[in-house]
Length: 363
Image 1: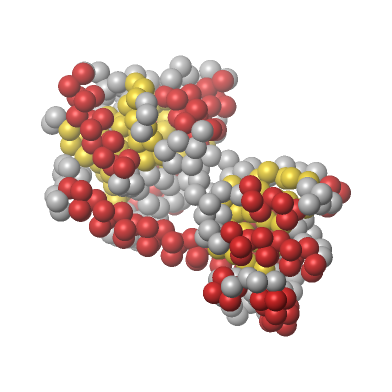
Image 2: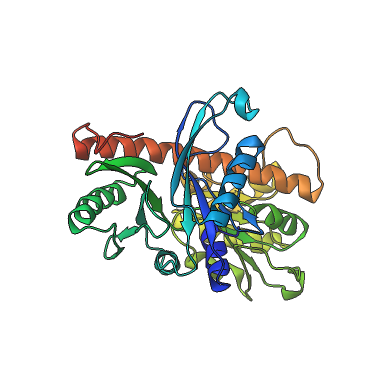
């Protein structure tokens, strides 16, 4: 998936100004969550904040800001009859001018390349050159314009980084700031097999907020087209690639060979640190693999963690794209469950650190 930061860097290299539109707070039923971002230039729109008249209005405001060199603006949008939307919720949007010489873009890209999490602190009001702070565990770049203000914001950002808090609007020294966590994608998918289903699945995964390592021993099976966020890798021994995958990866095995499938499966199960492992095949294939894996000393408790058959239940089509859609659905459901558990853990950890209080009042 092409990311908003890459898009900003691209237009910055062309010397073009832009408006970054980000959802800072929400209430009730809304089309997108806090932190969702859309970038608007004079000729392009990247991303979406949910579509409909809200998005149309936001683009109109952003383009007017570009034409008039307007300052940062925070606007409130009730999603009711006046916008022609029936969600009934409330969205606050931050419209932030991004100058071609904005240094925070490069800072964020460097942290992203090193997979270093950080918190970006943005004023909710100010001129077009309003400062930003980028706070990681080991480094700080930028300024909000005053030493004492920076110190207060850094303390809050550091705590939020340590407790993995989501984006939020907080008050610091009488003014409001948007504290936004930036982390490397935690949805790392390792896909073995470039057959019909693998090729169909990659088309879907490339549109999701994920990184995909796509592995096959046959160079000729990969399509000529490149997909955003997808690394194609030819390996004579695909099973050896299992050890190189990050902890918490989502493994999918669907090669052209049952013998290779079994070898890769054994390596994955012996690692045991995956977020998800799915093996394409039937119930009979699973039973056959179970017998062979037990005979090779793989614990039954590990084998039980293997999803096979894979894909959302109730979809009977054998078309490669239909199978790919069902697999993507299962991955997203599984990831959502992990995120919900992680969010609950983070809330408990934050309450423990802060004694149940809040750092500042949210908008």
